[in-house]
Amino acid sequence: MALQEKLDRFKKQQEKCQSTLTSIAASSNATTQKSKPTVRPPSANARAPAPAVKFSNDTERLQHINSIRKAPVGAQIKRVVDLLLQTRQAFTPEQINEACYVDANANKAVFDSLRNNPKVHYDGKHFCYKSKHDLKDTNQLLYLIRKKPEGIAVIDLKDAYPTVMEDLQALKASGEILLLSNFDSQEDVAYPNDPRVPIKVDDELKQLFRGIELPSDMLDIEKDLQKNGMKPATNTAQRRALSEVQVISSKPKGKKKKHEITKRTKLTNAHLPELFQKL
Image (spheres, rainbow, N blue to C red):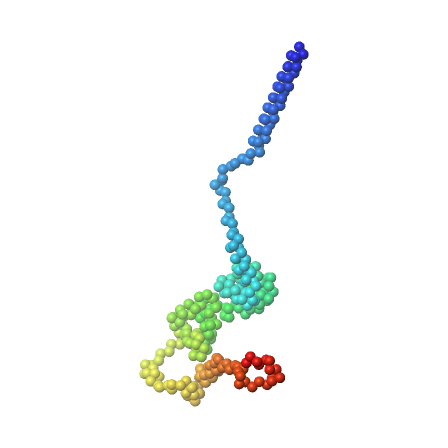
């Protein structure tokens, strides 16, 4: 009987252990399923990741910006003025920094030079390009030229607005203005050609004018004009004098001949013979 009781007790312990192991295995399976992440298929509307900026490209850009900001003030001002001229728009200092990397807020010398530049207008907030003549179109251009019977230099009109040179040629082709070259400076001058005052020259007068023989030297022509009470438009004597001065100043100066010490050279430091033993 004692042996049978021990066997029964052993079977109960075995069953208890088996049930404990079964419950432990079930709980571990449930925990594993919960911990596994749920894999979802990629959505069609999902954005593609932005391409990474290469370190080398970013380094080159930063070096370029640094070289601009360390450049002389004049070079930075030219960069900004070129931007304003090309775009013809008003920029804040922050917008200038974004467009051409010139940081006017961080450089007082650049800011002051830009504000006082004759080609730049500053209203307290924005910078914009300022041309010599505030013109917007062909009508304003023609009105200005007609107000200048003595003529106006084309170089003073070139930056008025982007298509001003094309408009000048169009006005010349239509006969509303004259474009003549200045003899001294070789620059074009725009003159008004008022269509309300048509001038017709007789053919016989043209032949007489063309038949007059002029002196070959401009100095003689200028003297004849002065004799007849007219002021010459040129000054040949002054121009020739300036050209001669430039030629003289451009001539290279002769190099002085270097005197070499030889055995025939008279040596005055006779009390130091060791200096001249190898001569």
